[in-house]
Image 1 (cartoon, rainbow, N blue to C red):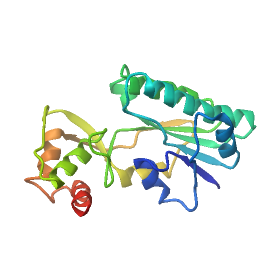
Image 2: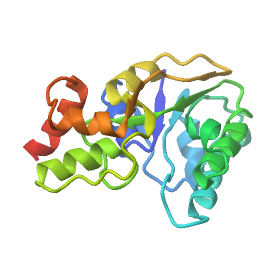
Image 3: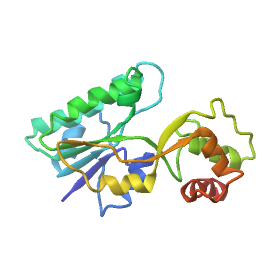
Image 4: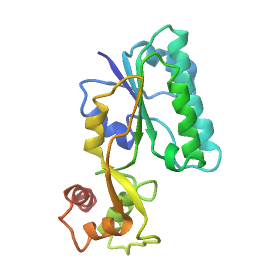
Length: 217
């Protein structure tokens, strides 16, 4: 089976691609239909990770919907039916009116136009190489600690579901088609994350791995 990946240079995509043997990494423009058609032609299965999740108002919507739409349109135009695995978010459930949650919800409907689709609704992902000050409080905290900067915690009791990148990539290897999958993470408060990275360092192995990554850098 020939597997293609969009967003192969992003956080999830770069970790996931290491688990595969010679995947095709899409490096063109997902807004260019001809470019997407060429990519889809060679794929039996596509993992669609590409997409913005934090940008100025309106950009996420415009960028992501066109990219996802082109993947499905391309498969229809060339009469190829690759399996499509899509990385969605739990925000479609708990934050559906945000631009990101709304966009992902609409992308899910587009993905379901494929003959064989699988949608992963993913909680907060963390792990070595996460991007600080973007969408991961773990990456932000570990980066700040490595720079001896003070951690700013605005809402210490806020809870979230967090999944370690290796647990997510393992789950992605086992899609179930024409179904939604919610890979389970661990519920933590912001205060707990801070403590595991400071006063309780070492008690949470995966969080320590994230800090070690930035300390090495």
